[in-house]
Length: 176
Length: 176
Image (cartoon, rainbow over all chains, first blue to last red; front, side, top):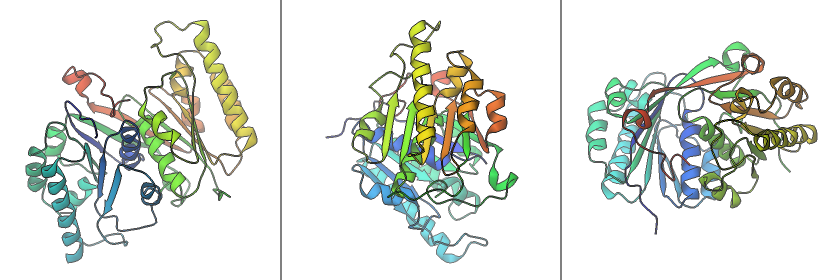
């Protein structure tokens, strides 16, 4: 039986810097160490190559569910909207059921920015959050209304990045 | 047999915002999913209460070694300097042996800021880093020379924090 948070917050990690998804993952890892149950729902990440997917398979109390297609979205297609809506529906279900102590909506900020889902729908769902549940929102972009609604907001600011300064590409084990 | 990174970088996560240690932890979690070996050396964190310590015990390929005493340091004492020097010596050994793919020096920036260790010694050690090894430095503060030396720098900027805005205290499972 998992313990409960007395007061779950809404946390936001956004910005151009590295470390948003990994901060949410690290928080999940730490929380499971105390016996909390974590559900990470990933928007726009229908890829099995991510190390966290492989790692989570062997980790109790951490569930990662991915939505989206493997390709990077240039122009949003019908399938992208459908996938994002499925992800949001699962977020709604996870909040309504209240079984998980921590819910992570990874890249939700970008899904809103790309108009795959509507910020109003996200806000409605978050309003129904039970008091014991912590919700983490990540994304390069984050809608001002979500920044306003959140209790804790951290901006990950890119100061120096080798993709930019050194033309380096994403590396397996580090960047995915 | 662990694969090797072709090119390991020096990464820095610093700033007033939440998510520095957790970003390093999440990176570790992801990397172990791909079979990498990770050693996290924590400065100034001699506490067993942290969820990541409990979690890491059951996680292969992730070693966390803590140095310091449980109390928060107001004025540095001899024991604090001794502990930080031990942590740095282990960092040196880890780099020299090159066995780990990723080395995390958690809170090293604060240990330098508090003059428990010297930035010159840290730089000397980092210069000996083998090409395949990735090193992650975290801390609220980070010495300008380390920011300059790093390949990838992210500032975690506090935009809103309930410790400040709502007087909320650190919560088990989330903040430690």
